[in-house]
Image (cartoon, rainbow over all chains, first blue to last red):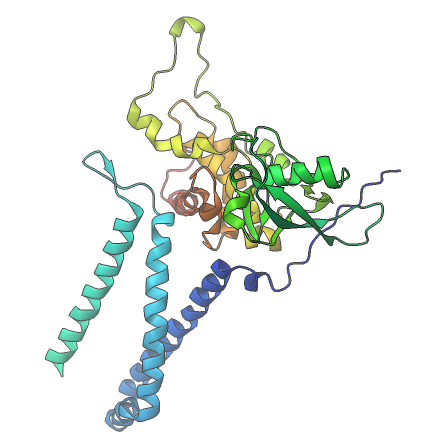
Length: 131
Length: 251
C-alpha cells in the first residue's frame, strides 16, 4: 500500500493573503460602481421616455445632496477602475510594433489613461455646450 | 566560505504524511553569510539541524525551475532569493501554493506535467522535410515573436500565483498557455490545430480573469498572462470567423 497522502491546502480567504489579490478584488469590485452608474443612466432614459414631469423629477434628483454624494463615490470607484484597468491592459494586447520597436507596457498604460482623460474632458465640454 | 555573521529564523511549513494529519510550522535558527540564498539556508537545516527536511532543487542558478516555493507568501525560486534581503526575519517558507503537498516543501506536480504533455510543447513541422532541404531559416523578426515565451523553465511559480488555478485545477494555467503560444507563433510550426482544443475549451484561456499576478512572479519575464489573454482574442476570432468561412474551408 502506498504511504502517499498528498495534502491539499484550503483556498478559503485566498484574496486576503496577498496585497496583489486585494487590489484585484477591489478592481473587480469597482466594476459594480460602473454597473451602478449605467443603471442611473438607464433610469434617466426611462424618465425621459415617460415625459417632461418624470424627466424634471429625475433632474431634480440628480441635483440633490444624496445624489451628488453617490456620484462622488461612483467617480472615485470609476477612477480606481480606470487606473487599474489600464495598468493590466499591456498584459492583454499582442505586441504593438512601431518602426521596428515594441511599444513598452508603460507607454500603453499612459496612452490608455490619456485617451480616457481626453474622452472625459470632451464629454464634459459637450455637456457644457448642450446645457 | 566567509564566517557566518548573522542568524535568521526560518519557519518551514512541514508536512510528514506518516506522522502529520496536516502541515505544521517548524522554526530553525540559521546562521548565514551575505552570499547565502534561501535554498542554502534550507540546505544548512538539512545538513546541520534536521536531515528529514525535504525540498527539491538542482541547478542553484535559476534555470532548472526545481526550487520554487512560497517565501513570505510570494512564489519565488529559493536559489535566487537571498537571506540578506529577508533579514532580520523571521521568514516563512512553504510549498508552492495551489498544488497538493507531497512532503514538506515538495509538491505533487503531476497535474502540470500532464497539461504540459497534452499541449505538445515542441515543433510540429508544417510539412515533412528531408535533410537535403537544409535547415529551417528564421528572420530575427520571426524569432522575436515567440522568444520571450520560450524562456519558460516550468518552475510553476505562475500556477502558485494564479487563484483561478487554485480554485479550479482543471484550468490549463499560465505556463502551459505560454508554451502553446510559443509554438503556435513559430513559423516552423504547424501544430496549432492540435493545441487549440485545449486553448479554446472552457477550462482553457477563458478560465483566466486577468489577475496578472502570474506575470509578476515569473522569474524569466515570460509574461504568461499575455499569452493567455492574447489567446482569448484569438479563440474568439476563431469561433466567430468560422461562420463567415465557406462550408468545408480550412482555417
